[in-house]
Image 1 (spheres, rainbow, N blue to C red):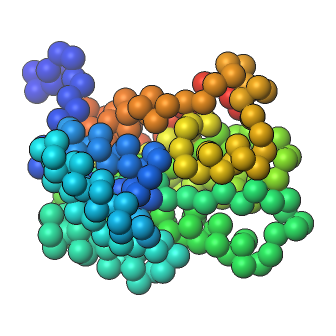
Image 2: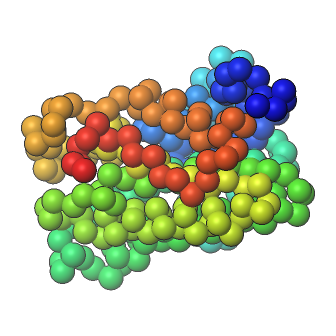
Length: 259
């Protein structure tokens, strides 16, 4: 092995990196932002609820990190492009993008309004596409490498027919987006990967449990994941040591969706 690679080659040091996390006001996004900051990244945190972002930024700064709260409605294309520029202007070129913002549909396909269809696709597919392209464009212009992590879902691989067909479809679109953009941008040293979580404790999951009852009783291990159990996967995908990994979706679902 080349002497340039230490043994083991597994550093998670993100010092000097700038990260942008969407949907950062709660749940998995909040956890992702805190984890990246704890490893040295300067983190731009984006979501609609600015008060929640300010509270998270205060927490990150108290722990010695750098955080920039940025209000963002991911259904607005102009805001998506603007937020990348704001993060770059205040923190530096965004080299880590975590496309975490998402929305469930929780309705039968034939009962969905066109407005809801558009909203699910706008948030789950269109927004990460636009953000990824804007981040990649700036990385290509600057000649810097980058890491993009998209949030898919176990629903992309397993749908039980109980009313989330469009969500499942949108998350499989995220998987394919990840694969296609990875190929297109590999020559620029921009890696694109995805995480497909199972059912984890979060604000969104609380709403689902209220509507559907205890979904864990049908799992091989009847439990929800803790957001902390995604830390290692996220850090693996954004760290320098995973430079040879791109176009991959890592399923972190406790076998909830079967195989």
